[in-house]
Length: 221
Image 1 (cartoon, one colour):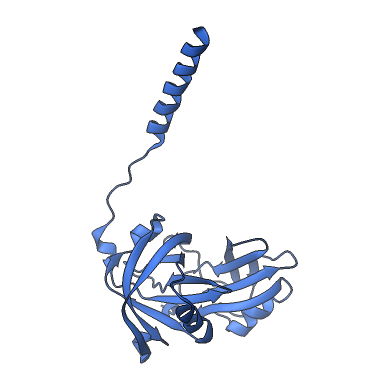
Image 2: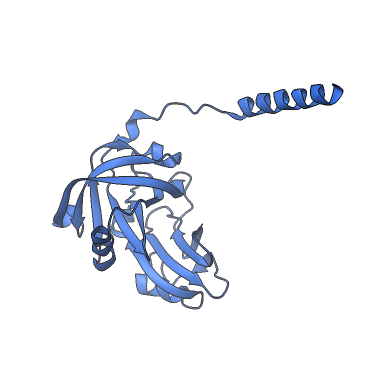
């Protein structure tokens, strides 16, 4: 009887603790409901979506998400193109910052849709299934030749390195690495905004590389 009472008290205590740990988040900020341009990246059979941030709200966040791979044709499109961009219908990107699984509707373009990209799909549903990374572009460090990278761990030795955007001038850069050796996350470049090939060379001794994305035009000021 005493053992049964003890087990009951433990169960009640555990339930109360679980209830206390459920923290309700405040409502998302409606100011972040907007058209958030994205690019699709590929590694193996996986497709990743990144938003294309700027310094100004509501686009002042960095997000990397794994998306559900809908079919082989879509995978081949992303794999074979130099750049695939999404023009989504407005949605609140704070849902992605919080790690929610959501479905967005977007036009899919071969190339940058803001610079004459070719429309491939209209109103395509894209399932944003798993958050891999998020960062708000606030409290940024001063622009420097010293560059910091965050690490996204995939499976086994596979990693994505993502540049922590600094104050202007800066750049957005992601590179895939299948690690063979240890890889530095802080490195010095010849300029505050180096060319992509210089950055690729900085990672050359880390393992097998695949440049994923580079853009400096949106971070000049």
